[in-house]
Length: 382
Image 1 (spheres, rainbow, N blue to C red):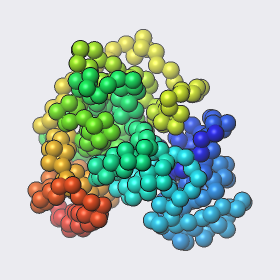
Image 2: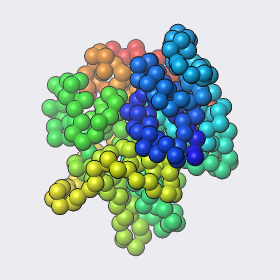
Image 3: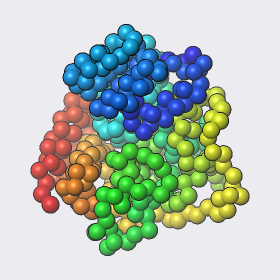
């Protein structure tokens, strides 16, 4: 029985993590969970899985939850509560399924507590990859990817030496606007952006997919997860999302991980690796039904935020921190109807242009730069 701390339980990844745990009650037990404001969903989860610790966003929600719970649990709230739920309970593994930079400190604390990390929160590695990987190596804990692309690479690398790898190849669906020209992007709507052709994801990550920032974040995440230079990380367009990613070796061999678009598959593998468990209601891949798979070279001029992510990654230091913070604020403003889709790109470029990267930043510097960037981007006018 593996005990799990889950932060972000009511988001898309959190819900699907609990689907996996529900399918294997003899294998996984929920020790703690955190959620933001979705009390209805969180209460259902708590009553079913009965975690010993539950974290809410606010004290008001914590008080309401205590009154409605039918069993005794420790209920905490806020940022300190999030860290407690992630790191200061008996869970053996932290599943980091929160959205945004807020996942950084809980992850670092969980690593220091000796917990393995199943990481779906790519912003943690983008913002402070050097701190996270150094801490994991020092404490001897695993960083296990949950993103389908990184899980694919993780599985294709199993048992192989780092020095034998030629290229990591991330596949990209292209998102909601993959068939539109840059001129056509000027008039797209929020509803258009949220209509992903392949995956069912939360609003923020769906917009990131449409802008290709999500793939840019994944490139930086891959650099830290697999200790690979950016020149050996490639992205190709693959509209079907059947090949989740590939690894090319120095002898020309390419190992590809394929499967239907179902996030429960990489989530379950992160929880159970190196073993595999049955996932009975997952649609099995039948290539004769797919018929054809298509691949295209990435157009970095069309998808400018992907190029920007490579540039920020190569600059290093606090540049990725600024890029991520600017993106989080710009996407939030787009979701609120304040700015247009293409202004997300403009605001990120402006934030990076105004910043001089600081190399090898400590946590306090990262937090400060992140905060200042968010404040600045909030003031950018249309």
